[in-house]
Image 1 (spheres, rainbow, N blue to C red):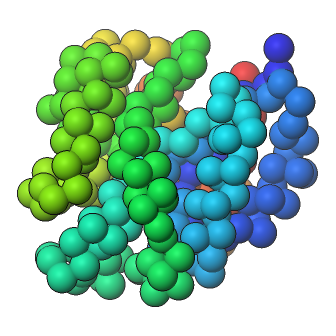
Image 2 (tube, helix red, strand yellow; image 1 turned 30 degrees about the horizontal axis):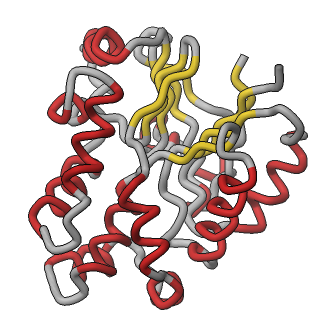
Length: 241
């Protein structure tokens, strides 16, 4: 039985991901969950997508990828290049090199990505939001609902709805954060939510370059692993006990 590793918000930092996995000792029977946002903002998003797709093809039972808001943003920009996705893509750090490298095969893969996963005590998601509850009362239902919504490559509004919901954040950061987190855990199972999306520095009010470790908050029910790589912070690759 290998170790469980998680990473989120790679944002095009291909070499950091390769180096980080090597330094963490990932390999053999180890399992890897990438919690979304492979591309945009950084230097080589399409390189990260190709790397991760290749890793998943070689080890489908050990390499898992969740949909983040930048996956649906890239998909929306690819499928609806002259729509409202175009402006949002620019504002949110879209890179022309990434879009030029996307193919129909990439688009189908992006559209098929699950939104939630659970392994033991850990509930894995990209965004620190309760919007997942809108899509279903179980992990399987959430993933199936969104996969079906994105199956029609001509349904702009369905794509936009997924994008809009996945951009929301900070639902576990308020004074009632533990209660909110427990509501999500009660729906989908697990003891601790693990997410990316919101960089740790925004929750701790420190510059990203000063971040060195993940943040456990909401009375120990939520773990943020987004070190803010695109903001000058580290790409955190965490081994979960």
